[in-house]
Amino acid sequence: GVTTIEPATKITETNSNGGRVRVLIGILVGDFLHNLCDGIFIGAAFAFCGSSTGWSVAISTVVHETAQEISDFMLLTSPSAGNLTPVRALALNFLSGFSTLFGVLIITYNDVSDVAVGLILAFGAGVYIYVAACECMPRVHKNAKNLLM
Image (cartoon, rainbow, N blue to C red; front, top):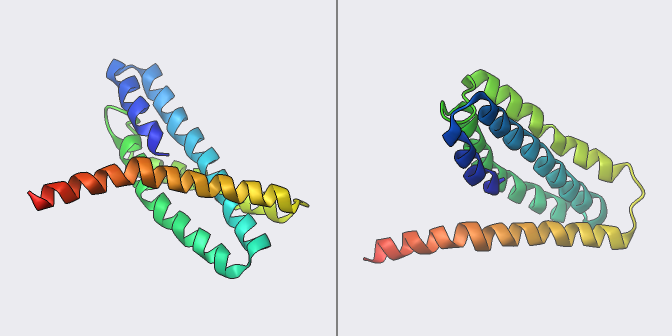
């Protein structure tokens, strides 16, 4: 999600069609896999931890995805990056978002052991903690510091 933004802007400095294709593939394939994992985490939470935990994971995923999908859209439509029309960017972003449903179906319709579910949820929680600690907190700290000055 967030890590695709920096490499994508470096690739587009070449301003070539090959650079554009690499940006599009990086964003869309990365987003597809990211959403697939989100779906697995959501499905595991609902299937094995109950609806309360499932809804907590689902809501936190929606909040987390909102900022990421906006940044993906901005890169997809940027003339120096993806250079797609807004309609095409929305359509491709929407299609990559369907992988969330695939992730939910994968975890729901397979026989998964309790150990595997624990590992899946621990990994998902670790990803969210990492993003909060490494991406969000430095920005919050910087903004709070600026407000106090």
